[in-house]
Length: 205
Image (tube, rainbow, N blue to C red):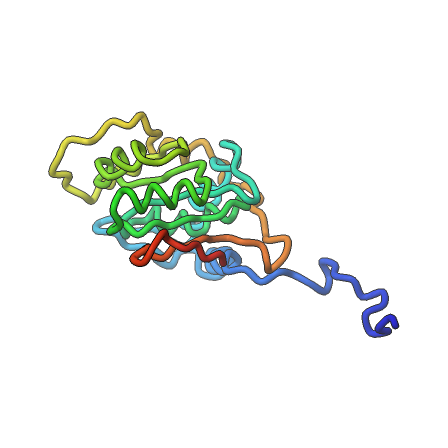
């Protein structure tokens, strides 16, 4: 028996929009464009700048072939690119895989392989760890390195042939029309357990 309350009431733009945390940033940039969103040492960015840079990241990732179902991994400290990645990566439809920086190289390598990571965005300070990880994993992700202007690096950088984050960002379109989820079941992130009792387990959200 057909439910009469469901007849001729299919989902359409007028009556349905998937819920997503991405729209928070768009609204914040619209309502509070000049309010401070990010403070990192001497660096300050407004919600307008935060939103613009996130769209640029999404656009640059899309130009690199990232789309719905692609995995972009991050090995970043508590820095502005980590915030931008949490919006910019899902804005192009890809899934963010944020890695715990305290994990050992073998565990990180397992995660990259299991998630089929295509791009790895990392902090220069963690370049030595990334070098070890790349020697252990099967995937060969495109590398993007963030150089923190607020950090005094104690050691010489490890040259992994990575793109510079700011230069990568400049490739993106600040007016990029970012992608909403097609459905609330669409994944925007994957996180992993630490793997203390076996291999890490992935959790999709």
